[in-house]
Amino acid sequence: MSWIQTFTGKHFYPMSPRVEDIDIADVAHSLSLQCRFNGHCREFYSVAEHSVRVSRVLPVERGLALWGLLHDAAEAYLSDLPRPVKMQVPLFEQAEDRLLEVIVRHFGLTEFPMPPEVKRADDTLLATECRDLLCPTDDPWRIDVEPLAARIEPVGPQQAERMFLERFRELRQI
Figure 1: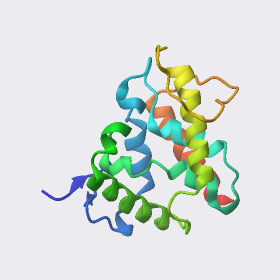
Figure 2: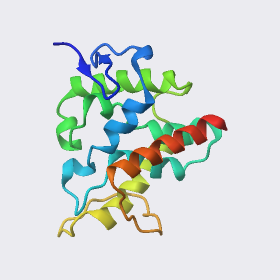
Figure 3: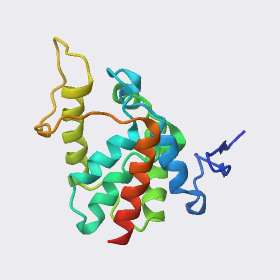
Figure 4: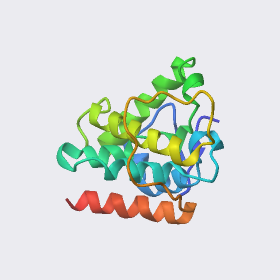
């Protein structure tokens, strides 16, 4: 079988993505049910909530906030691999990049690959998430950004899905 069935019932071909098959409802729902850090955090924290938080630290100019919201959207159709594994699977990275380009173009973003401001915002959230959601370790990650001052109190999947869709509608109106 070369397709997956999405939340909205579409047949989606992740290795041959088509712009017309991208649906923000599928993205929001799927990401709200996927836990960051491959589930290795102290409590459930969704990719959808992470994406909303990344979006909120970015300016709306040049579509950066929308880029932040969508930066992990390919995971809705491909899932994710932990970074050390992903680096060893170049075909997966290529499929993910191809799909992400289709997604961001579908939503009117013309800048590709991911702008450096979005990567920095993603790293800022990563530093914050490490502080607030991961168990302490003797060998902490070295992330070259400061975490946000506010602490993360994760929400559940249903609220994360609502937050994602609300942020998407907000950014589309700007």
